[in-house]
Image (cartoon, rainbow, N blue to C red; front, top):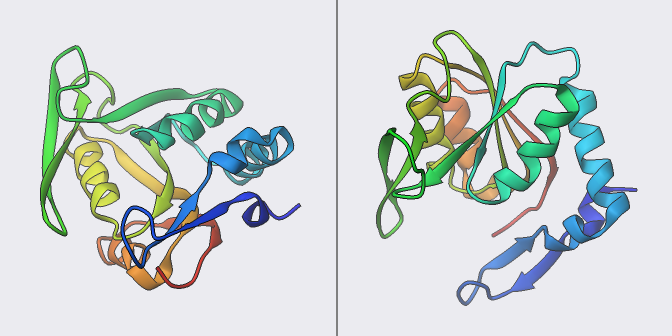
Length: 175
């Protein structure tokens, strides 16, 4: 069962001309969701991973069950002001402005090997910022893992230029 067939395309969302790749149809399908986590767990079962870091919010949905399947800890990376304890953050540029993501200061220990997880790689800005945060804490990003890659938008290439390994279960051409 190709996972790509379980992902819905929503035309013209969030704005005209954008083809939004919606994983909620994959998540609601028990066979598709299990197959997704199983496929990722199989990929990483023999890789030394200390923690999985998930980017808000779909990275939480995917990262937590993957962390459970691999027997490792899970760390949330959130938007500014959402975490309750002491945090460090990283500001990054967006197409029209800037944003900030944060992580708890005690989330990752120096030298820990971290798998970064999110649903989709588009421009790569948020993933690059998350990698920077993990490395600020002394962690080593072993790979950036996504369900969907939109290669025409350039995020995959951007992360690779930053020295990161990138993996996605499927690709969608175009926007």
